[in-house]
Length: 206
Image (cartoon, rainbow, N blue to C red; front, side):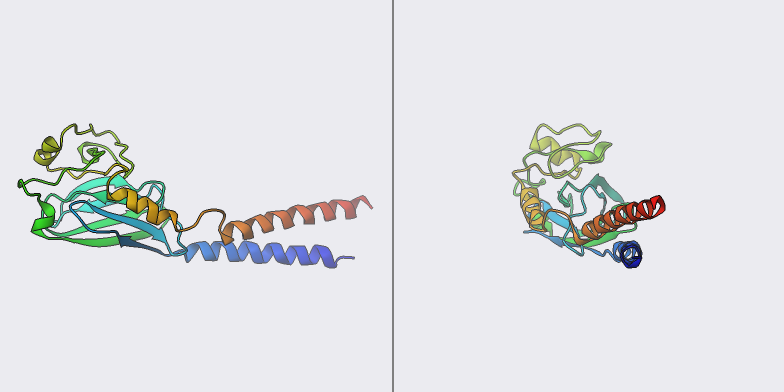
């Protein structure tokens, strides 16, 4: 008579304990896409889920903060370095997960044929006072209308859908969509709690 409620209670206990531990062990990583004048990358969790809208900080080779922005909805991010050297790109989601990547930029990659940064489409200027993403949505920064002005400003830029960031979004989309196994476990736990509560109420009614 009491075997079903006890089994449901045990299932709830296992789900409640298992789910937080799995979430705590959620690792992160990143990979750089085809390098060019603009450096595009994607930040992912260990299970392939994208680090969507994570905060990103780009540090120049001299140690100064060059840009503060966010990843897009699929974990993609791109920036246009203004000089050669080793750049550091760090992303964190505010929940204890942090991934950092070093990007080596050669002198030929940092400047175009005319001596300035290579222009990119869909350019915004998030470093002027706001956050931007690879979809070309600026934060508080003003959009840069011409590539020449962007080259003179020396500020990093987020790329529009036609730039390397589009490849980043396509790569991140292969990470998989739909509920993960943690969501399924949580749903089973909630369902078991409802069934257990109903069984207890029915037992009291007798």
